[in-house]
Image 1 (cartoon, rainbow, N blue to C red):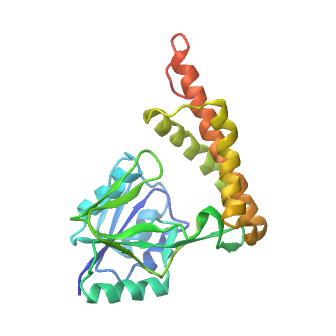
Image 2 (tube, rainbow, N blue to C red):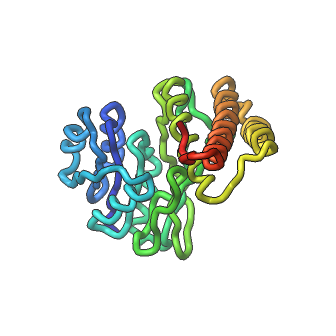
Amino acid sequence: MEPVSATIITCNEAHAVADALRSVSWADEIIIVDSGSADATLRICRDYTDKIFHRDWTGFADQKNHAVDRASNDWILSIDADERVGPGLRGEIEDAARAGFRLRGYRIPRRAFFMGRWIRHGDWYPDCQMRLFDRRHGRWRGGRVHESVAVEGPTGSMRGEILHYCYRDFSEYLRKLERYSTLAALDCRDRGRRATPWALVSGPLGVFARAYLLRRGFLDGVPGFAVAAMGAVSTFSKYAKLRELEQGARAPGGTGTPG
């Protein structure tokens, strides 16, 4: 049976990490890379693994690659502290491990719980993620946000799901939206994208139409509307902050960073 290392990056995740750890307790080892938790995160993690490493924050992809590098095994299952491996997914991974993993990576659908219900439509589902992969052929890639695993060679998909408890309440959603839209604006600037008036208008409208209408987010009721609407707000915020970066870079003595 091919051994599997589960990797999780953490920082002040005491409210969620125990459930994540329980969901991967069957793995051959669990690797934690923590960037300075001040709550009970590390104490909770020690109940499940002694392979806990501190590393100052350098970005999502970089932190996750560091966890991969610390693993003893070549096959990596990467989850976040607010995610859980569903029971069906565990069995599917174990069956593939017994067969020797015939591919180099597997995409896994992710289902989010938000505003009291599971989201099954719109931009949040199935949200397939490359989370099980052979590290000899795959690495995390990405900018400040939207990191993903790039695998060289044949890949496949699992049917079982990762369960994502992404936000404890709507206020947390808004706080993360503020942070991530800033990081996304910086990434856009680094890639040379521009915050044109057309992008400020068409970007948010396109995101809402895709999530709510084309991908049938309306079937998820009020939470589905919220997901589509806040996706549009996030897109607008990203472009508005990018425009501020552009104006700051052009202004006399401008630093090019948000105030």
